[in-house]
Image 1 (cartoon, helix red, strand yellow):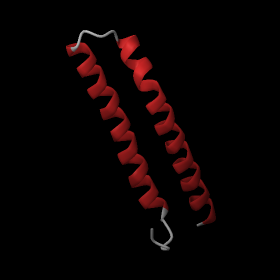
Image 2 (image 1 turned 90 degrees about the vertical axis):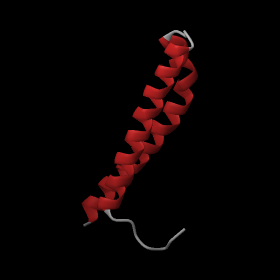
Image 3 (image 1 turned 180 degrees about the vertical axis):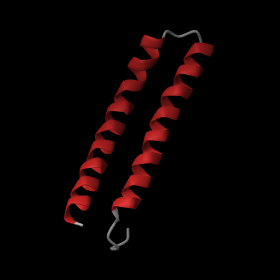
Image 4 (image 1 turned 180 degrees about the horizontal axis):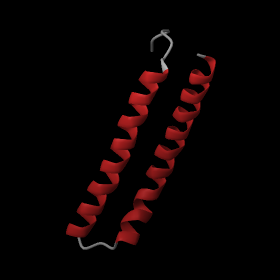
Length: 72
């Protein structure tokens, strides 16, 4: 881990990549569920714990970005 401060722009890039990962995870899971003939509800129930963690991390990153932007 680096001691170099993170810039708001770098955080924006990480947030964007994490959002894209989340979307890809949902889309890929739904595609696989459809092929396996699983219901959307069942697939989402299996995916929900992971999405909760991802959403929590995204919120932390957004707060960190807002704090950095406010101090600059």
